[in-house]
Amino acid sequence: MAEKMEQALQRGQEWENGTDRTQPLREGKRGIFSEHVILPEFVEEFCRELTAEERSRATVEKYRRDVKALLRFLGNSGVVSSVNSMLAAANSFLKSRGWYECTVKSVRVQREAFRCREKELSLKEYYRLLEAAGEKKGKRLYYVMQALCSTGIRVSELPFITVEAVKRKRARVHLKGKSRWVLLPTKLCAQLKAYAARRGIREGSIFVTGSGKPLDRSNILHEMKAVSGKAKVERGKVFPHNLRHLFACTYYDREKDLTHLADLLGHSSVNTTRIYTRVSGEEQVKQIDGLGLVKEGRKKTA
Image (cartoon, rainbow, N blue to C red; front, side):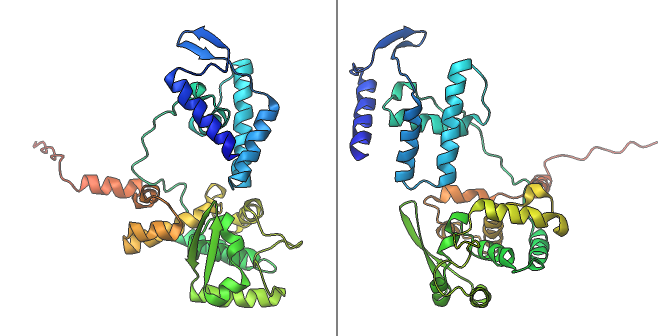
């Protein structure tokens, strides 16, 4: 794979220098460019490369869908949605083939300056979800949600919450070529220790299916949606990643330490973490109104 990537990079450099002569050339409105044919086996080969790079199964499947959408688009000139998301998959695929001249820039969109309350899970809503989950047999979802929300870990990192991790009150997370320690709250460890004992789990991952496999996002999402009605929380707000979001926002509102928050979340760049520093739209309106830059009109007298 390393050899293929090196060849692809060399091809990209040759294309930039105008010295690539490995493909037939065709003249178009944007100049002379190479012709390429996307074969179905290229897509599968690309997905195998993503897997070898330790991309998550969800990411690999999404990229597969998006590249296939590109194929459909090229075949019937249809319009595709989620432009930047699909361009990321398409560009990654094209670069893997060494077809650098076919890549395109993403659409530049300015990030929203404030958080959308309609999509966020509040602390009160989280507590209601916990209460509803606590009434379910086995209470697995109850403990899963607390593990996610009290640590800020990703769903894909949940298998690293093991019996051994609970004993030492910290979990070693290895994912996507990165490794970090995740601290586990003392109260959470006490609850998970008792839960594992009741379930007869003596080692390894604590949150597993009936067949012993680690829970994945679809398992957790389905269970969370199932209790949303009883908890009186809008289904659109109920998904696992919102628990990580709630952890991050709660931490930053209290500590105002962006660098430490980035470490806790496992972000390589603080810029990724800045999303959690944004205030809500309502709070931003209050801040702007408080500037006093609009002069009150004079009242008319009779």
